[in-house]
Each structure stands twice: as C-alpha cells, then as structure tokens.
Length: 206
Image 1: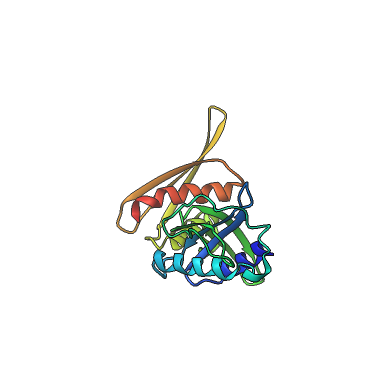
Image 2: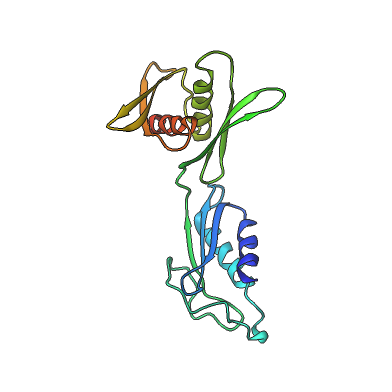
C-alpha cells in the first residue's frame, strides 16, 4: 500500500530524525519530517520528494484510487502538476522542537539509569547513584546530556500545591557558581515532570 511504502522510504532517509506519513481528510498524502541536523534541510526535503515520487504506482497501471487530489502545498518544493505515475504530496521539513517526550528509569543487573528522550528520538543517560537525592541528580544529568549543556553540580526539588495544581520546581547549581531554576506543572509521573522542570531551567544555558 502507498502509505506503508512511503513511510518506510522516508524513515530510511539520512538526516531524518523522525517522521509522520499519513493521509489527509481527502486521502491526500501528507509527509512531515524532523531533521537531526546532520544534513541541510533542503537536502532532506529533496530526498523526501524523491521518496514520494518513487513510491507512486506504475503509470501504466492507472491505479490512483487511493491518491486523492493535489493537496494543499506546505512548502514551495511540494510537487505540482505531477505527471502520470507520480503523486502530489504535501511535504513539511522542520528541525525538531526538542521537547522532552519521555523520562525512563531503566534497571539492569549492573545499575539503574535515568534516560531522557526528546521528540526527535535523541537521548541522554546518567547512572542513578546512592543517596536520597540520587534519582533527581541522575535526571538532571540525563537532561543536561540530552541538551549538550553544562551539567549541574547539585539540585534541589520542591513540590507544591498551587490552587489545586501540583507544581514541581528544580533549583540547580552550575560549575560557574550560577544558579538556574525551572518549574513544570505535574503531568504524568513525578520523574517526567521533574525532567521537564530541569529542561526549563537549563534552557537559559544553551
């Protein structure tokens, strides 16, 4: 089927960190990709266009029942007036937002690790040590490594009820002697919320 074939092709393109391939309301192909920074966005878009073209059914088959009409164009490079055997597709190429999508605590026979993952699939990890604050410290290090920023030397965490809403605040010391602070409204488990608060605090150090 067209969408599955196109999805596999787009995922294999160098420079694509993550992607979304679907049919719009009128069964129009829609491709959105987030780049990983290893290639110029224009090169990635050109490769996506090739993937779209080569995923089309054979021109002689005349089978275009699932292709819909020419979609709304999101970028100037989207195809127009496609000849038989090719398809029109809305293509959107963007750098990842970097939003934290997951905070995982992973255990093995050797250690316990905190892993922060953003919506582009990049991750940062840190080993959870001993002590009451070890999990918070590991989450802070994991987020800092995900962001490739200065790693904090200490962290203090506060959870408060503000008008019926739990708010997690992270105050961290940096090697420079500066302090940064960030907060997040509780969403999911506390480790994930803490990761978002830490990410907010470290955003000023990027």
